[in-house]
Length: 420
Ligand SMILES: Cc1cc2nc3c(=O)[nH]c(=O)nc-3n(C[C@H](O)[C@H](O)[C@H](O)COP(=O)(O)OP(=O)(O)OC[C@H]3O[C@@H](n4cnc5c(N)ncnc54)[C@H](O)[C@@H]3O)c2cc1C
Image (tube, rainbow, N blue to C red; front, side):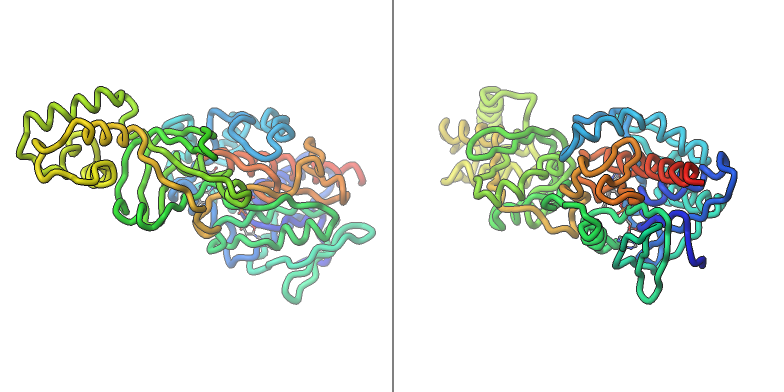
């Protein structure tokens, strides 16, 4: 371990690894060596990276655009333009990682193993001389005359430049914590309110429990005080607490702030989006006529997941007939209506331990977007989820992490070159 480093990167996740590598690679163009250290609080780097994309690491998306981001997305646009997916793919290809595109523009390592991404990043970082120190949680960062002092356990580390890549609060079980937010605030930054995003939504237990474990394709709408707020389509997973699945994650971002303002939220699911209410009604009439002895509770089993169909009939038809022949027209209409708008009151979202990403963070106007350098504290660079930007599901968050890491690492190294 050295007394003084040129660059200390705090956080060995996606953006920290990209930043450390990008800084260290600049040495090839510089006349003198550059001492880069990566400080990670966990016993290993990249723990969250290994969990991404269900262990497959959806590392970017062909459809990168500001419209897929939330928070300070206007300010983020130039970063996304400078780092389109092809630039990220080139970065990985040069490191020796092949990638492949699967559904909806999602890009994964060719091996479909997140471990391939982490292995390549770690090996290349070591190859380029980055010193990696694990079990090194940084608790304090102070600006000094010629750089920074970082405090970790009993150690004090001096660095001329610092890249803070400590991530957000999502998934604390993998090391996420608020130390980065506290450090940036101590260095003069603000942090917008933080709340979980890409997370399961909670409904009333009596509505969730009967459907626990079921899955259905649906077109979902989030309603706020009776007005449509947002739509998403895909597979909905019914859980013990409420609604999950990618399309629910996409609707979850604004739930917590809206509930804090006492707004009434509801999700409605259209479980048969290709069919009109009238055509579903006609199908139910036909089934009741052709199969008069079919148990009443199973009338929808040819249309929907059996448990979901039964729950719709239980809720929509209070005096459920024993057999199909007993249905009255009004009851069949009510069942058809509910298949098109199966509604769930939303009571909250699951906690940070279930969230994939953090909404909120350091406002982008407090940084120079060409370099990711703080404009409140010279020599400090900020990357990744620590910032007030979060993306949709599909590789958008890792894309932001790589892009900001690459920009910060390069700019940080270049700033030292200028000084020499
Ligand atoms: C389960 C799960 C699946 C996901 N899947 C995807 C996906 O497939 N595609 C996608 O685009 N996004 C995905 N994401 C989101 C994505 O992983 C994050 O947005 C991204 O990793 C953020 O990168 P980062 O570098 O900002 O932070 P992180 O990757 O979280 O890295 C931060 C690192 O800093 C360390 N650290 C924190 N504080 C300190 C400190 N004080 N001192 C030293 N070290 C510290 C942490 O231990 C951590 O290693 C997923 C998230 C989760 C939780």
